[in-house]
Amino acid sequence: MKKRPVLDIRCLTRDYAGNSLFSKPHVNRALDDLTMTVDAGTIYGIVGESGCGKSTLARIVMALDRPTSGEVIFDGDELFRLNDKELKRKRRDFQMVFQDPFGSLNPRHTIGRIVAEPLHVLESRPGRAETRDKVAAMLESVGLTAAHAERHPHEFSGGQRQRIAIARALITEPKLVVADEAVSALDLSVQAQVLNLLMELRATRGVTFLFITHNLAVVDAIADTVGVMYRGRMVETGAAQEVFANPLHPYTQVLAEAEPSIEKFGRPATQQKPMPAIAHSGMGCSFRGRCPIAAARCAVEQPQLRTLLLGRQTACHRAEYLLPSAQSAEALRI
Image (cartoon, rainbow, N blue to C red; front, top):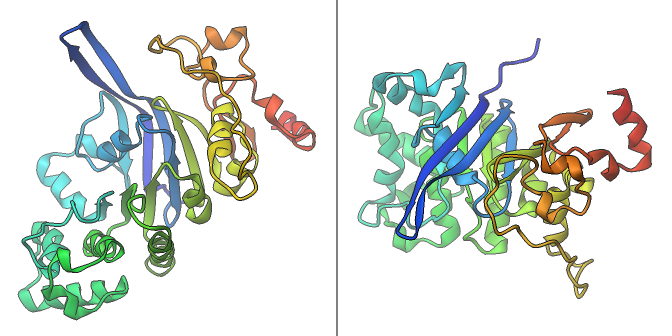
């Protein structure tokens, strides 16, 4: 019997009203009918260009924003059907690590107080001695020491600050941690340390991570599953290494080709069609203006996620053209 997913997002849409002195009121769609599931004990990577809706997705999963339509089911409960008291009780089970490891820490508070802060909203608050012990244990679990609890954020490096942020997120022993660009502000060597820490926490504590980034190499290194987003829609999902080794959507190919590597050093970048100047009307594929394999159907029918290979889904009418010949027969059997 398959276990219930920790996070089940169904047909999620988020619209924002756009107002300008020089244009008529309009609607900006940040998320467009997005559906995905995150299994317990896994790292699910979300990648895409800036503005594709990644951070909007993070805010809604954290119940910091409300969707226009759709459902966010966390551990069996639909978050936006819970009342304030129920949601507050539920929050101990999902926490967030923000992008800026310094901006997310109050510079006036000690590290001990910062890490302990989520414990203060629990129904049964631990006593002072128990809180001190929990903070010390959590700091040690992320590679710091109990003595660091008396210091302030400015006394630490960027990597150490992010470890503090991770300790704060884990202090309530959550089932899900949302990491929104959690390593993008760090040096490469520090990134590696933090990523290794996340994988260790997943292995030892069974924490599930929703890891949001624009860096494909990072997701390829740590994620079990990846979802590729474009203009608020999920355009491809599958095992991370398989997706990047053999993309089944033209947009994923664009991202993969743009990723820096030693092999491509000095090689001119592949020229892509320019982004259309007009907003997407909702008809057809939103990527067709940049797509090298677009056809007439792409202009009138919006592609939906479909299973092309076992464990692989893509939202492309012509994805079969991207398959190696050995996999074409397998796709026809599914």
